Structures are given as structure tokens and as C-alpha cells.
Length: 186
Image (cartoon, rainbow, N blue to C red):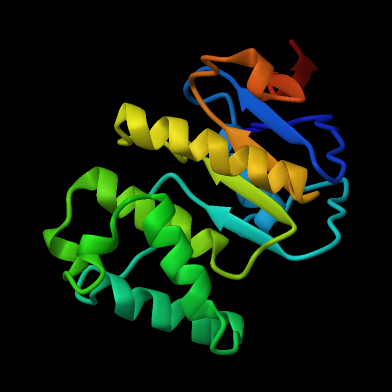
């Protein structure tokens, strides 16, 4: 079963690219190829710089606290002690500081998604690959997400965002649609 064929797009520094498409169109498969979880049967993927990945399903440890998840990922990324300042900024920005020492299994779905996103940002990636990053966010957090995304854009960071909903097309530098295994500009 071929899900993607002849998919080609380029993201330059400081761009936010949105990828939309129906359920099953291959959006998550595309991101899994980009991060190396899946190997394409043909073609090539070229990326330069560090990338962060926030999948649709949370990649967090439920038995650990929020802080322990940050500690784990900072060690995995090989970060020095400055990660603590980044953590504090992310907790503040996403407004879940009060949960810093809570066990993840006790958190709401939206707060788990905030943690999932924060962990993808912890190492200050150059390219951020996001799969439905704001599913489960309340309206305030959704707006804060876009404030932060624009801050990253201004810093020259790139974002590829897969979503079912592109409420505000002006938030994106380009909006691409996966349809029938190919990608088209919309």
C-alpha cells in the first residue's frame, strides 16, 4: 500500500509550513519519514540542523513527574544545566508550572500535550516537526502556541505543522495539502 508518492517540498529558515489533509492521507506517515521512524522506499530526505519532534501520541513517561521527564530528556539530548532555564520558560509559557512535580499519569490530556510539546522544544531545535500539536489545548494555550511559534519564526527557526485545522491561513508561510499521496500548495 503506497501512502506517499512524489512528495516534495522545501522549508527555509524562519518559515512555518502547514500540512493539511483528510484522515489517512499520510500526514503522520510523512512526519515519521522525516524523523527517521520510517524509511521511504525511494527518494531522499535532506535536513540540516537539529530537529524537534512532537508526535500526535505523547512520548512521555506516565510514571515520572513532569520535572523528571524534563530531566530524562535533557540527559538524552546531552544538555548542560541551562536546560533548567529553558524548562522554566516553557512551563511559564504553556502555563503548567503548578504541575512541575506532579506525576504525569495524574495530568489532563491537554496538560500532557503541553509537556509533549515542551519536551520537543527543550533542546532549542532549528526545525520543529509537529503532528497535531495543539489537540487538547484550550483556546488560551492555542493562542500562546501561535505567539511562541512566531517568536521561533523570528529567531530563524522552521516549523512543519501537520493539522486537521488551519484556522488562520495567515499564520502559515505556506499551506500544503496531502491528497492522494501527493502534496499540493493550497
